[in-house]
Structures are given as structure tokens and as C-alpha cells.
Image (cartoon, rainbow, N blue to C red; front, side, top):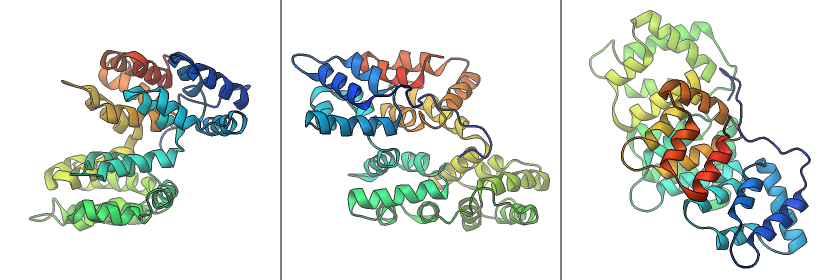
Length: 321
């Protein structure tokens, strides 16, 4: 995901890492009466995902216990959601979030968009393979049963990996694609949605950047203005998410985090999902963008919206710097 910016994580592998020592410290934190939640935060929020997997293996090997089961029995609420999220492999965590967004009555389209829009083909493939392994059902089939119309076709294109590989660029084609977008929207009465979702789901992000620049030269409007004028509903949300991720993914996530904390109540599911899933990718970039956009730090916003061990865990992942 580094076509435009250098991703900076907030969680990096711990130096002088000792899986066995961590496993024993976690056991001690959960043994007997009461739980030392701070010790759990200090260990699991300061290790990379690969290191957490090693700790779980050491826990099993040396103590004969399942770390996930022990954590589940000792923790609760949103704090538990954060810690268990950290213990899943990154693609398994996203699969669980996708499944949750489609399970039961109604579908959370925003979650589907947020997870799938920023992914490269390689990342999508990992998610698709992992989803079938976890739920014995193809992700495409589940998505198709929960969505419809152009939105369904766009998501299907994303998950079958039809996007050109990163770095694929063709300046002449970009001029042509910009014209196709113009002719399908502003240049005619009504909108040919298919042209929009085909180009935005197929072209590499590098190519799309070029297409958007050409579009502006051609029509005098930005692609965002065109999308807003021509589309609505889930398809508009999904395509504008792709546009934002092409131009600056941290901006997209900073906006999502702000929305999750804005107004009455907090969308904890979104807050947890973005902080957990981006902590080892580009959460530092997202923090910087958030501060620039909203004139306050992400950590101060999270502190005012959360409490207790849940707050401490999220702030440990964000980092105070």
C-alpha cells in the first residue's frame, strides 16, 4: 500500500523478544484471583502480530494452556475485543470483521467498503483464501447474497482480484479512461454506472491517480465532484472510498475514525477495527493526518471517548508520540 506515502506503523516488533518469558508473564497476570490487565496491555500491545503468535505457541507448549481461551475467560467487553483482535492473524481479523458485517439481519455496507476498498490484489487474495478456510464458504458467494446491483458487482470485481498490479501505468490509456468516465457521467443524460465501477475496480492505484488528473484537465472538475453529482448510495460510498484510498489512504481512515467518535455515542466497532488492523501498517500516518485535519491528536480524541482498560489498550496501540 505504499504507492503514495511511506507507511509508518505505531506497533513494531519488540527488540530482545522472548516468547517464553512473555507467555509466563501473561499466565502470571491471569492466574489466581483477579487479573493484571495492565500487564496484558504492556505485553500484547507492544508486540508485532508474528510475535503474538509465537507467544501463543509458547503458552501452549510450556504451560499446556490455550492463551486465547484464558484471555476470553479473564477479560470482557470492548477491552476483550481489542486484545482478541490483536491475537488473530491480520487477514483472519479482517475476515472475522467481514463476516460480522454480513451475519444476521441487515448488512453493514460501510464496514465492507472500509475493509475491501484499500486492498491490493495480493491482500485481497489472502483475505479470500482465509475467509473460505474460516467459514467454509466463499467470500464472493456470501457478499453476493448480502448485496445487490452495481454495489455487488463492484465488490465482486474487487475480491476476484481484477485490479491491475501496483505499478501498472499507461498514460495514453489514462486519457482514454478519463474520457470514458466523463462520457458515462457528466457528458450525458443519466449515468452509466458500469463504466465507473469497471475502471475504478480494474485499474491499478497508480493508474487511477493519473486518470483522476486527466479527468480534472478534461472536465475542470475533480473526480470527487463528478462522483457526487452522478452517483448515490452504497455505490457512491464505495467508489469515493476507492478514490480517497488512491489519493491518500491515511486521510480515508482518519475521516472514518473522526466519524466514529463524532456526535453522541461512539462507534466502538469501527474505532477498534481501524486501530487494531492499521497499527502495524500506517497508524502513525493516520495519526498525523487526523491531527492535521481536526486540530487535535487521535490519542486525545480516543481518551475522551473511551474508558478503563479499553482506553489504555487503544492508547497503547496508538502511542502517545
